Image (cartoon, rainbow over all chains, first blue to last red; front, top):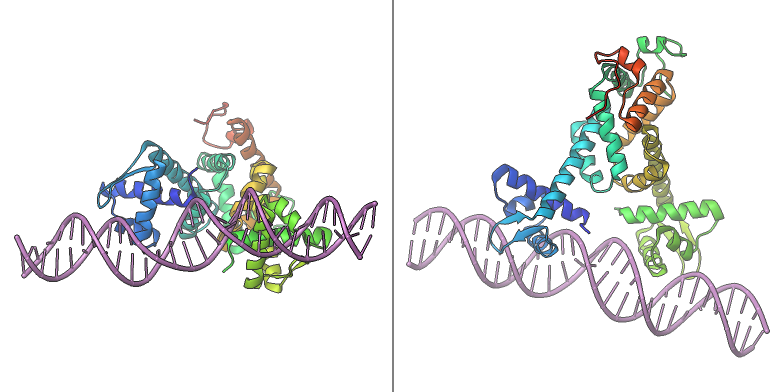
Length: 160
Length: 160
DNA sequence: TAAAATAATTAGAGAACCCAAAATTGATTC
DNA sequence: GAATCAATTTTGGGTTCTCTAATTATTTTA
């Protein structure tokens, strides 16, 4: 079974291959903020595990299973990050959280987050609703026009 | 710095103390599905770290810092679980995911999730909107009345 | 092409987990 | 009080991941 850390490494390797066409120990080291020797060691482990093809002092390529894991992890990352940003979490935080969560969320939950983003993006009504939530989130106040349609007093009301 | 695993152990210890008034190695072992020897070892580590007071063959109590961590972790768990359940994730999955996520979410994001739950619970409008999302989530179809107010054709439309 | 610079690997070690099996302690029962 | 039983701890070992320092390979440059 693939570990979380292996998923991290596979994701970075995949990204670097997409960006530059090849992978350097140095780059992975910088990207993940670990020492070069840690990268070498992980490369050896992942070669043994069948996720990458690794040759000393040479290049690294992803195997089919490695590619699958990398893509799946990237996809999860995107889903989570998009979702959090929709909710109003700042890009940097959303990215940071997505990096952690992507390894552990059940596919059920992932599916829910995906559907949520779809729903928001396909409905004007939803977008409006979201604006109201964002306003509440940022200021702690409800928006007047919105309150008119509820059973609440149309006075700015601080959330306690 | 407290590790994720220490947070897990502290949470369980705190829960057991609340429930039964005391803590047995056996119970923690069962709760976390680890061997008794792992629990003993962790107890020793957490005693060294100042999170618990541990005496061989005796009881375990939480220090102030241990209590703080346990409570904070429990609180985060609750926020995340509630949030996911609001979105329609099944209780079991929501709980499972919350157990993982509680250790890693930024406080920014946690705050957003809390506010989201508040917002939903305090607005009829929001609750209605949520029903529509839940329906879409479960069936893949939009609800007619809802679509009337959007730029979409009021025919059941499968999401692709 | 030989020396210098850079990159990568190996060697050795440590932290945070985990386990099974053996030894110990504390509680119960006869 | 001694024997038994259950709970706990110790011992010894394993995995995954990390590091620094030393070594080796590759690339650059003079």
